[in-house]
Length: 373
Image (cartoon, rainbow, N blue to C red):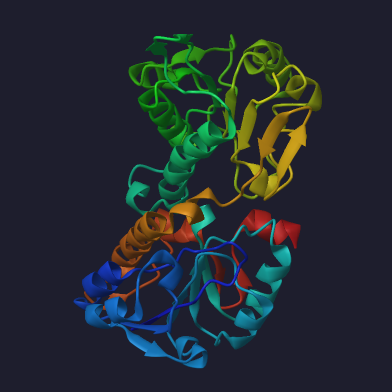
């Protein structure tokens, strides 16, 4: 079976879907890999690296002759037009947000996996692209946030006096949030964290942060597989009251409430931003879907009364070598999962495959996507 690796053309995107180590591993199982020259260059993987692993450097049209075509982002109109009927296309496509792309893929009679639709289960963790990329985003958000503020992160005792530690507030203790907490603590910051799921309190405190808890008698915000879900209006009102004081005292606020295929919940209104001191910063990791802050602009840095709101929607791309490596390992795990003695097989009885396969030979299978169409 032939697997094609597409070069990314989205502005600011440096990742590549498959790296040489995955080529080497899957080639042993009979898979062949084809890619356009310099596809991995921005991730620091050269054509020679791919050739040594067993891949072939070909023209773009030859990549589209493959049985499986992999890409980080959703395909462009040109790429969709080049896809052959029956091809399996794999990418981070948000099916409801990018509904026009879904329609075009369906018209081409292809099959498609959305990595955003991977079931959030224990069995699927090694395939979970969202988690592997969120880990990097949480780490880098702290580094960039600490660079934005004109302060030391740690407590310092100097001959000239004592420097108080910077205050970091992390909203959302999922994969990105926990990595942000750990990174901020390593830099010496005083860290607080909030999450709608009370069961993550122990994880937050084990990293040395203080857990901020909204009292609730219900399971509001607790989703399947231990992941967060959207909360009720009543819960959000209580959350806003508690957050206002904490946000106002923070030097760095990192928001991580990103729900695939849905607008990001608005957690920090303009009035709350105005309680923050000039020089402080909000790193909004949900800017891709509208942002958790009212003032967030995707891929822009907004300055509001001296408070910076950083809306970089692709922090993983700033660490392209490792983010590509992790992305590729996730793809490798997915292909391994679909691999059998007979070769590659799409077993729709399998929960993981059934969840990701939103189009099969032109037929849209994912019900929410179908309703959006």
